Structures are given as structure tokens and as C-alpha cells.
Image (cartoon, rainbow, N blue to C red):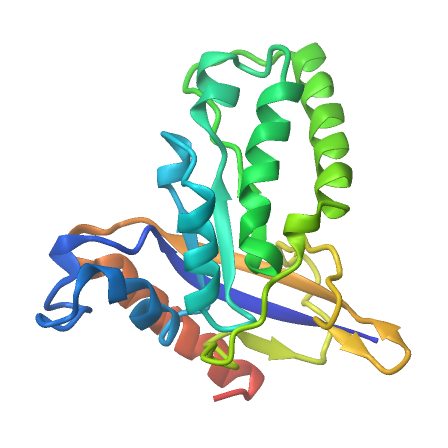
Length: 223
């Protein structure tokens, strides 16, 4: 049995200029992610493009979001802009191993390519091979399992339906995790679509994300 989930969010979440338009004035910075995750179902970690978050930071993020929340992670610029996919295996492996600290909250990985970079099929093939190997390795890593927390929220703003995703929908397949998308007869394959707004000025991104999320939920009858 299959279905589809739409996870809609923004690129980043800890913006000071969102205080007022989105975050309450008295909310401490460390409480922003939990507040965000009560309203939206996904967020892109864009800081990971510049440097990898510490394991403790990633585990902390994983613990304060609902079980069906999805983090999209922007891959390190070391892989895409500095090395330009040359000898990709070490960088890809390090990045994926670190991101597994998010457990089953980890969703799509975004690889942002340099502007005006000409196509290099040989490097692309090597990168895809390294990515496949890294994903296989990460799927067996002991850090991939989420640690339970009694205080964790049980649901988020994701919009899901038992109906199949519409033809032509952009989806990202996620590896089945124990206890997630599971049924009595085994794992359920769910197509997941993520949409991210990055116009963070004056909180426009979060406003747009909330609007689209409401439209999707109304369309599929989940809210």
C-alpha cells in the first residue's frame, strides 16, 4: 500500500528578522526550532553548506521536532564548490555519516552546484557512485536510529494521504525506518515531496510556506 506526503517549509529557521512576523518577541533563540516545527513540517539546514553541525547539535534538533518532521540538508560546499565532485567519496561519506545523527528525521540531501560550471559526466558518475555507497553505508550505521524521548511531540504539520502522488509530482523516496511508515504486514512505501521557500526577508518565506501548506491540506482533506 502506498501514499504521498507533502512536507512544506523554508530554507533555515533561526532568523532574527522573523521575530515579530513569526516568532514571539519573548521566545529565546534556542526555542525557535520547536516553535517552527509546530507550524511547518520541513526545514532545510542551509548552514551545513558552510560547515557541518556538531553531532550534539544535530541530535538536539532531532529531539525537539515531531516524529514526522523532515530535515532537508544542504551538502557541504567542500564537495560541490571546492572539489567540484573530484574524489568525492571521502567528503560524501563524512557528510552523510554526520547527518545520520538526525536519525529518521533526515530527508532529502540538496547538492547545490556552482554557477557557470560546465557539465563533467565523468565526475558526475563518480559522485553518484560515491553517493550510492555512502547511502548504503549510512543505512547500516548505528547512529541512524532515533532515540526515544518522552517529551517528543507526536505529530507535525505534514500533509499526507493514502492516495498515490499525482502523476508528475516531484518526490523523494526515503528509506524505510523501523517503526516509521510501517504496517502489520511490513513497511509502507510513501512518496514524499518537499517544497522549500527561501525568500526569508521580512518573514515572507514562512508566510508563503504556511499558505501553501494550508492549500495542500485543504485539497487532500487533512485539515
